[in-house]
Image (cartoon, rainbow, N blue to C red; front, side):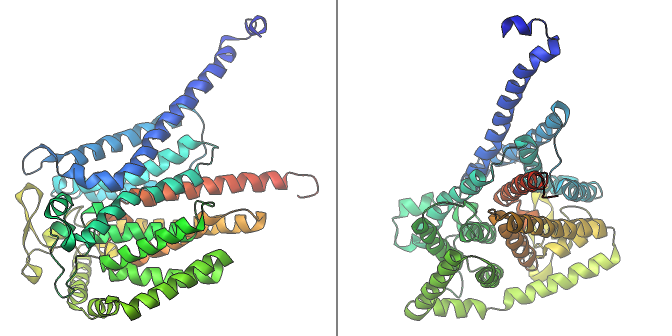
Length: 454
């Protein structure tokens, strides 16, 4: 082999070594992205408590890591485009358009420093999705990513269980827990703590858990024992209930009903068992009174209606948008609420509606890009589902992506979904779905290339 290789051109002799180096670099890039996928839900809140640069625009350890991950994803995408030809991710163009409108909203903002951190935090997950799919190349890591995201929920669930049991735990243990919306006091009118896990706020935690609930229910890890799946669904369902986030409740109930119609017998058995367990819990525990108490609380819904009307009024006055991060400035004084924001600015509350937030901050451009991205998720989900049915191959990620897009789109009506909270786990599962689509498409094209199948 050595004697033959000396007669080859130098670039041909170096090619195997270059491929080996490229493979090593690919594993390193994916290793960083996969490691942060696992660690992000557990560590991000704790890192946000360590202030590296004090001041009105102080920098925390979490903020520094967000900036580093932002730069890492940008460099990784640029490097893979330069170093080797790759097929573009399916959502490449919708993601770039969406990020472009977010950049536009940041540039037109009169308080760019206020919106800069939010822009970085919300840009890291979609950029990481692009980098993951592009560096994976023809390799399909979808199952591994699905399992990794599910495993990333274990520590937040342990913390949430401790928060739920905090009235009966020693003071030393309670003192080590992250506060639920800055307080572990019982929620007014409910008498229990609304859990937030290690994500600090109960709404992001509820959405995070809802996404993984759908992933576990729809078997994105393909294999795995049913008892573990049952255990996660029981504990996860309890914690989702304990967030008392009604938009997540409603979305999961509707999507679970639809899943019962389109999934296999094993998933239907799980759903039937879950429904019976939930009914028993409502009959023999205080859960029913808590449920009715939360559903009967209308003050927050009334406030959201006022905020929605205010946002649409502001949009009508300036359809081009006010700039990223200006929502809280524009609601200052509503409901008598005034808060001190970054930089010492005085603001109110968020709009609690992601569609309205995009209309106000980025105008028509941002809103269209956001809705287009949601629709792109549904289109990709449909393609995966159809290819999987034709090939009689696993296509769980297509089902999950369709359900997750509907889930996020519904939750965004009363809160914030993937855009405001970032949700690294969501975007990495989107990357897994993209990989599954590529693998199914290659299989479909290979099948069509066989004689007599054209």
